[in-house]
Amino acid sequence: MTKKFEASGPAAALDEKKPPLWIWIQLFLDSASWVVAIILALLLRYEMGIREEQLVSATIIMGVAVVVQALAGYALALYRGRYPFGSFQEAKALVFVTVIVAASITLSLLVLYEAIGIGRSVGLIAFPFACLFMGAARYAKRLYVEGKNRPGDGAQNTLIYGAGFLGNSLLTRMLQEADSPYFPVGLIDDDPTKKHLRLSGVQVLGRGDDLPAVIRRTRATVLVLAFSHVEASVVRRISDAVTGLNIRVLVLPPLRDMLGGGAPKGFSDFRDVAVEDLIGRRPVDIKVDEIAGYIKGKRVLVTGAGGSIGSELCRQITQFSPAELIMLDHDETGLQHTQISITGRGLLAGRDTVLANIRDAAALQEIFEDRRPEVVFHAAALKHAPLLQQYPIEAWKTNVLGTLNVLRAAGRTGVSHFVNISTDKAANPTTALGHSKRVAEKLTAWMARQTGRKFVSVRFGNVMGSRGSMLPLFTEQIRVGGPVTVTDPEITRFFMTIPEACQLVIQAGAIGRGGEVLILDMGEPVKILDVAERMIAMSGKEIEIIYTGLRPGEKLHEELVGTGELDERPLHPKISHTQARVQDPAGLNLEAWLARVEAEQGIDIASIPDDEADEPGGNIRVAS
Image 1: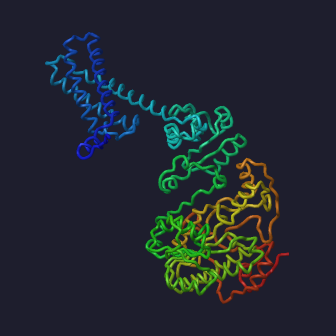
Image 2 (image 1 turned 60 degrees about the vertical axis):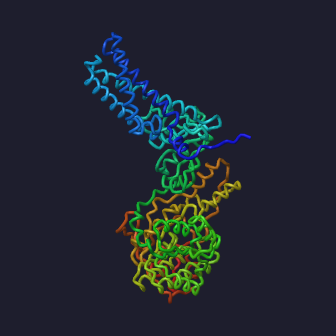
Image 3 (image 1 turned 90 degrees about the vertical axis):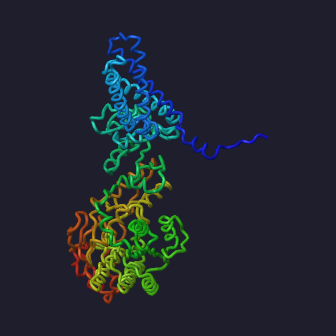
């Protein structure tokens, strides 16, 4: 039986260090380029009249060129695999090496001119020919490799919208990966100067207005938006232009998301256009890294950590190196999901997760005394407005008394920063949800006055993708074939993304002054009917929209700043500061609060003086 032995020891180590075959081939081609270039230089220098002895002498110059090319090329890593083949980086290194070789030839001819009888200008004449030949060899190699690796027949015809740096990078990637699911058949760009531009042989075929014609001509089935920042208005315009053309529109996530999730996922980073892209929210210009110093090295507690806002808060807080993150919720499944998203494990066995209900004042006090948090983000709340309208006492128990329990525990244990997460429905409230959150703002302001610490509230509108928002509801209604329910054709709402909302919440803990309510400028309100129609169009289904009418206490248009509240922006152009009125817990009265919730459904809240509209136990005047 024959045994096979593998090389080991020093011999194997030497073998592993041998240059690959393609490097020897490249060095041979570069050497041949200099030989041919020097012959051509001699023919031009002596007008095709080369003597035999000059050819013999030329071999000395050729030898100098080959040796210097090898040494300089190795020194500059041209033959060590440092540069991608056919790249600009390799071209720069190649030119530099060629200049060194040409200078060496010229210096040799100056010294040996009388001995070999060859003109000193031969090196200078040979230089451009050598550059041309070596560059041509590399370009031919690049064309061969790219042609060999092009996507197969199963790849989908793809248009790339954007012929800039990102578009060119995507195009190169699609062409060089043999298993790419996308084959680029054209580029789209709105810049008129790029009308006839070609990138890697793929031409700019038109502008955005030409999309329908280009799609039909190229039979493209995929359109990739190669923008670093996709404006919602642009996405809407493109989406409208390709409606009915049976083409899939893909976008790229922000670069920080692509690089922040571990190993690159390749073309799986592409995703379909979502309704969030169509609604659009420009990120608020907040320097989170600069203002989140109050979190670093501190014990931070988040209530409602299993919810949409609470879980995102926890994920963002971990980026600022808190001494300890305490995630509190009464939803054990939600806590597990949050823990998995942060640590990759959902064992629920550590001290980072705490199972408790904010309605339980005694349990909260015990937890705060044991863990001694220094910063608290209060995200726990009931938030489904129609359900709370039917069961307002539940809103009172959680949003009012539960918040008071958290505030009292925080006040007694020396919490320095407390951020209460509120809602736009607390501005001129007309629902049980709005009234309960309004009282929570006032209780927070009361505790700020009692402690002299930074106890603030943050108010914002609907959060896209959160549990209880309309977008998941519309998605499910479309999935089952409809109908899609809209309360009123004219109803509007403010929208923001979950990360944006949480950035604001974190910033509030730094810039807010005790007792304030911070309100984000959320831009223009979005018409709900437009959102429903776009989601139906994206689904490609024929689905009916029915109008159910406004529910008790529901506003046609939400507000962010209530009657009598100031809209001051002393620290940030997108963040308003207003001072919440103080509510002493001793004055809380459930019966009076329930009466107000019932009486103020559907009335003109602006007709009620501010000192009567929100104060439990005060008089109520119903508009006639």
